[in-house]
Length: 89
Image 1: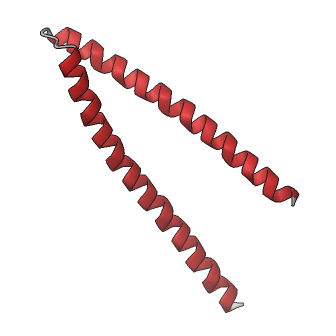
Image 2: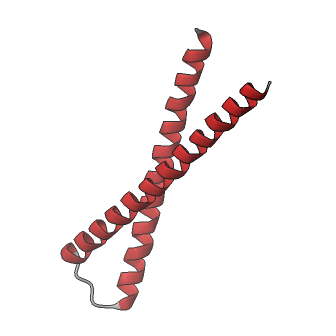
């Protein structure tokens, strides 16, 4: 009985560590892309007024959020397909 609980503990711990590390690396990558995209926008659309910059930042945030939601939706569907196929075997 103890062996099962220890094995379960280490499996759970490794799964949690994988999730945490993946999230951290994803966050770092997102920050890098954020800087790159902002630099590109400043290069392509040099805006002078503060109100134009605020509007552009909101449009950027909306676009990034929309893309993220769509990607997460499709990744969830793929994950469900994989789970369903593995359960049928």
